Image 1 (spheres, rainbow, N blue to C red):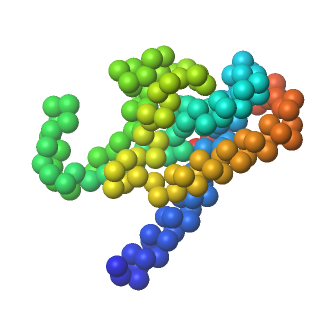
Image 2: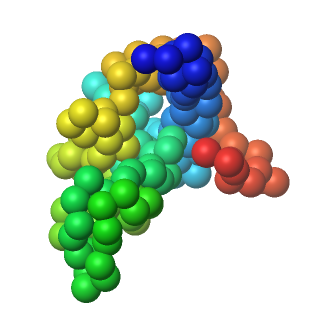
Image 3: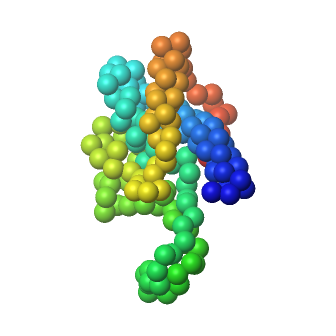
Length: 163
């Protein structure tokens, strides 16, 4: 790689690891605090924590879309796509596919297929920090639930933006 490519890749890794983990944790707490029944279930049964994280990722991935470039001439939904064309992929839409998830717009800790999401992409484009992101989010979740067992959301709270 050229020096410019090394710097570019390092910047993506550094900022990607900060911003996306922050967004992932923020949206998890938003989902839990706006679904008191789910928060109560998690508080009563901490074994649901892993699924809570996955379900939050499924509903609101930290990166809502990814850009890819077509490697071959093809057609998507009747639209021709030439090799080299930019293709914007909505991870949020894929993670809410009703063919893959029952009640795709609802936050459900007990969803058996929660980890079937593609929030971290897959294959050669899979996020290299996916395990660290999950670990950081779990640590934050445990710290809040252990330190503030009566945590709740204020009446004037608004959803997080920019994640």
